[in-house]
Image 1 (cartoon, rainbow, N blue to C red):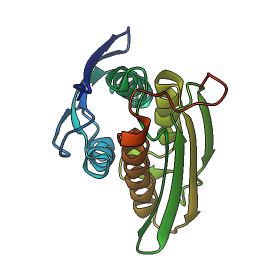
Image 2: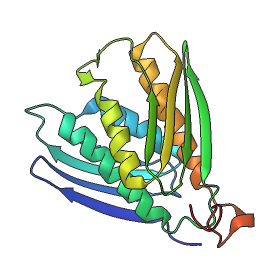
Image 3: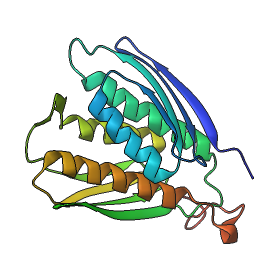
Image 4: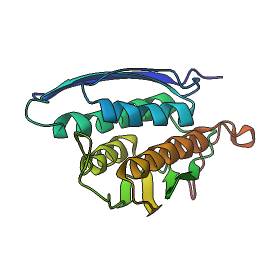
Length: 197
């Protein structure tokens, strides 16, 4: 059984980020990002994705959280892509519906090798505490571009912005878990059509 772990560092003028991921973990997390609500959402990815995440990020938060959130998505996407490697022997597709009280979200992912994001989330308010909800789209766009996945995210119901965000991230974690699970019948095979992803 291959060790599906990776560490990726990203160093730009705006951010210095290190992400370590273990795809076959137990949901353990260690975060130092300076963005508490985002850490709460990253914790949902780890716990529902059954992966271990260690993330250290320093960014230009004195300006705003945009660069840090986007670059966290980029770095996490690259780390997961590196950890899964050639994508052989995985289910490739994953989906999840997750409710939280009145909120309901659906996430569908395809480890296709082709980046694409369809994002259908309209938050009922612009901010969740101090966090700008628009930045979630930037996080997922960065993730998609560097994990090379097709990702559909839809919030189907919800009037509480915190609940909406939490259902999105829990569903994302679960969809990731299912797409990256090992399929014994596909061992050594890249799940593809006509020889390409």
